Length: 581
Ligand code: ATP
Image (cartoon, rainbow, N blue to C red):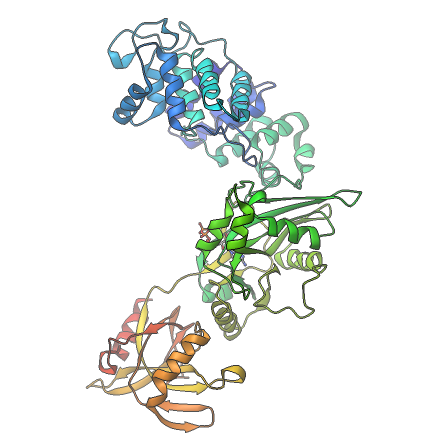
């Protein structure tokens, strides 16, 4: 296909407001492509390379401006392009307004009679889609000294053969600013329409391959059978499944039980480990955006080499840890994540560990369509060879397998959340145990627990001494609000035991111990003195507490040392908040 034809079609698609018509136009475009179908399917989405391929052109906008300026004639400089861009706001329009090759007089910006837009009377017409793709691939592969000049030369060579309309779309393509209203869903539907294959089969093939061009070609040349035969490929990343915000209450209402996991505060990784027949292995690690980050994370590669005996694709998180193995904040992982130089030195400063929560492929089997619990079982058996794993793993040991609890018990979920927070992680993820793995989807099958929107300031009126290593700390704090006409009665609304680390417990014990009014075994009554700020998911009516209400999933947010008990919230406020739910 000539690039001029592609550009004309792109212009028509851009001008089309109706989604269905856009799909029809993209479908026609794909049908009219020949050996260049893969390229056309990518270009129409504004992609130069397949989605799974992290190759980039590695050029800054100024390189592109310079190439446009050179092609536009001797009197045009890169500054001129930038000035016009500041005026017009869109590189395609700027490029289209020049008259490339100096053959057609002045462009629109200089008010002259530029060449026509069809591309028929100018330089346009002989450049093909394949030539553009090949030149851009050469450009991406250009490295070393003088590579920027070489890149400008290559781009100049393309612009120099462009008509205005071709230049518009070439500039946008090069700068990843295609924006003609064609998203992934449009191309999926268009492939179905163009080659008469069901969209769900196209969708599945896209999920496993992440390659729109290849799927279009297979749909055209091999039909449904070809699409169905497409599998995950170890070494080729797929999009990560994503989470929605949600509450424990919602999760338990929707599913019989929830799969509860810790939410690790690190960076998402997808591990691809290939074991050959002769036992040799090769590992690649990709970021959430499918960038290859293998070189930056040698610990992950080493973990895979010593643990995995079979080929696998695993989904997980890489977490920074301190000398005791406790997780460090997310910012620390970032110091390691995309580093290309001095990795050994960076490794001395920050240690990272992988933790895996999903398994997409194991030993030749694609597992995307398996339920979460089956995938997790497979993950567990793959990682069982980890020589460092204890038979009864310490959940605080963040390496290897992420633990998964199946439960319908809110109390247990609360305890898992508390442990996760206490171990320095972000909280919990709630997952539908029966759900399949949907690459790239942010669905409700994976929920990250929502941060609390409302909080209440409650008076601490009781507590319990802890057990074991926490025997000298007060924990499980009873919460009350003000009630009665004068607001000096107290009514209980719940207990908070979550989200409190040992250090915090020690400080709280020091703060509260002087206010102990009575003790009965492990339980203590406290005189009203200290106010806690507490988050919660919901307020429920409940016979358990004297107020008649209970805070569901209360979370300790902090001590309101600026508040006296008289400033704490009242029962009336609890009732108002409940009515608003
Ligand atoms: P977003 O995905 O919403 O743009 P984000 O990347 O900051 O934001 P969140 O949505 O807050 O991440 O949470 C989902 C992320 O949590 C995952 O992408 C993953 O990196 C991380 N995570 C940590 N532990 C788990 C787990 N057990 N299961 C799934 N994801 C986890």
